[in-house]
Every structure is written in structure tokens, then in C-alpha cells.
Amino acid sequence: MCVIAGAYSSSNFDLLRASYVKRWGVASEPKFNAWRSLISSGAGTTDLERLKKVNEFINREVAFGNDEQVWGQANYWATPLETIGRSAGDCEDYAIAKYFSLLQVGIAPEKLRLIYVRVKTGTSDNNLIQAHMVLAYYAQPEAEPLVLDNLIGDIRLASRRPDLVPVFSFNHNGVFTGISGKEASPAAGTERLSRWADLLKRAREEGF
Image (cartoon, rainbow, N blue to C red; front, side, top):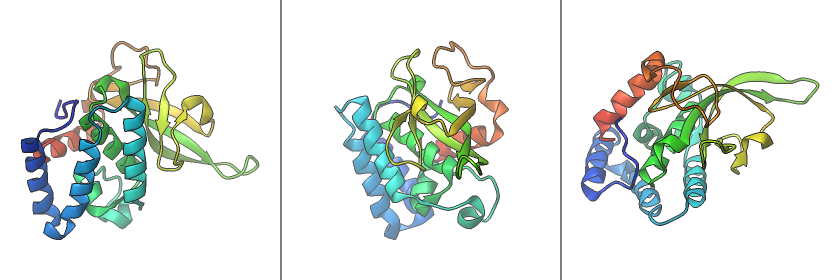
């Protein structure tokens, strides 16, 4: 596991900063410093306050763009530092940046899952279905999850998102066949999700 729950120490931040500046240059350092301030401000707050701060920051600072526009390739999953550095990304990049950031402000890893969903857009008479990714937070294993999404600014309970149809969920522990927090063990290892395994490797190389 390459991400440890809890706020980063100064030395850890220095390592992340070095990776960031090497890739994005000194001129883009204020973006990193804003993210670092966000992480530092998470100390001593409640989980809900942390969720709100991180969700608002990533939604505000990252402009939506598809992978072809942002990275010149299809289906690229960016690391948090890449998303911050480029200040743009698609739904996967928003969700992943929130996931890593919440771990850094002290959210327990087992409370977070990235969820692949099918999202319904358009009117009820002319619904369009497209693939999408969101981040879910479980206060307790049996609790209904809260959904963090780049499409909607506020954080809502899953029951208040009837436009989302879950497909599967995953985190550092593995891939889950459903989204229930009651599941004691993952359905499969993260190696089953090659893009996620590759992203974890690249994030580890950056210093996470």
C-alpha cells in the first residue's frame, strides 16, 4: 500500500514537492502549495468537514477535460500530482485526486472506495447512459455511503443519486463486486484492474 492514512510530515511533503516541481516547474508550485495547505488544514477536523473541503477544492481547481484533450491518449488515469499540475482531468482523475487527498488528511482507507457507475443524463424521456466514476465514503461498514462527484457540487447520500447505477467498487485492498460496506473482503486483487495497479505504481514513484 503506497498511501498511508494521516497527514504527511514535512519530509514527505518535500519529497512530493520535488517530484512535482521536476515535472511541472517552479512556476506551477503555487498549485502544489494550495493542495499542501488543504492537506495541512485537515488536521483535527471531522470526517465530514474533511470530505467537504477536499471535494470543494478538487472540483474548483480542476477543469473537466477528456483524456484525449488533457493527455493526448485514451483512458489515462492521472496521479494526484498530475491532475494538480495540469489542473484538468476527467471523472476518474477527480475521484482519484479526492481519494488520495482524503487519505492524507486522515480518512481511514477502509472508509473510501472508488466506484464505477453508469450515469443517466438527459431527460427521463431521452436518457443517455455513460460510464462514470465517483468516490464513496462509508462512515461505518454498514452505513449508506456518501457520494463525492465532479458532476454535482454537494455531497449526497447514495440514495439521493438515482441517476447513478453502480457497477463495481475498488480501493487499495482490491476490487469489490458490489458497493456494500458490509463486505469483509475484496472479490479480487487490484491486479485485476490494470490501470489502477499502474497508477499506484506511478504514485509511489512520485512519493505517495
